[in-house]
Length: 338
Ligand SMILES: *[C@@H]1O[C@H](CO)[C@@H](O)[C@H](O)[C@H]1NC(C)=O
Ligand SMILES: *[C@@H]1O[C@H](CO)[C@@H](O)[C@H](O)[C@H]1NC(C)=O
Image 1 (cartoon, helix red, strand yellow):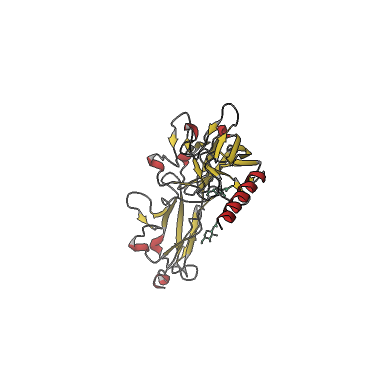
Image 2: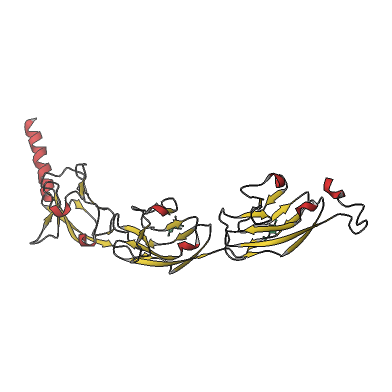
């Protein structure tokens, strides 16, 4: 029995020695800067490798060790070896372009060479983007190839001048709640919300080396409204007012009756008692039009449609009695109760 076992062991060892190429690995692998890459290497027959297994970079006189036993400084903390017997595969992390080259997987006196190429991030971004006051805008910027170097992606407003940080790591205070970053690796796009005209400027997208500048224009709201509108007692009237340019209105938008020191609010945020239940606001962004119902003669006067304190239009509302043309005096005010 003993001799049989010894025999089997001998034959096994012989097979291992004779059967030349039992290591399997691809010839070429591509990784991306900032990312990780698996360099696959395994025994075709799945048998364990003795502790002669190792990886080296740049085989030759200036070889660099990648372990498992011995790992050179250059790769320390960046390599991970498989625990599976027979699998020598190596995970290499936080890739840089200087990791490009030839990697050798060695085991049981055999080896395989893998050529690693590392692609950097080629940034794409448009030159100009237009947004609208009160709205959001996407500043698109992404790697068409490769990934940004880890933690190197960032946005700057007015690069070289005020250099305001827009993240993702550092966001300067006034922008904290107004910027959002994409979660997709390689997509550096920035979403900027609640735009004001003062957000206009140059935005720089960086990917750890290359960068792109985007010019952001913010269009405000130019209001359009008639000068005069006529309604009838008891009826309804639309006071039309809308942005001809710019689509969205900041929540500063409001209507006032009798603009001046004793003005009266007609909403949308705040509606005075006098108009409560009688006003309806358009739900369309950029359309501020107001529907005023149950008109009385005392509704006559000037109505101000405001996009902001600086941007407004005044409309003069005349309210005529329903039957003015039939009985100009006797019927005055009849519609008031309707
Ligand atoms: C990148 O992210 C932005 C914002 O999340 C998105 O609008 C855009 O479609 C993405 N672009 C690509 C190429 O993935
Ligand atoms: C704005 O809204 C009003 C009332 O809802 C509507 O009558 C008017 O046609 C709209 N104007 C525009 C420019 O969309």
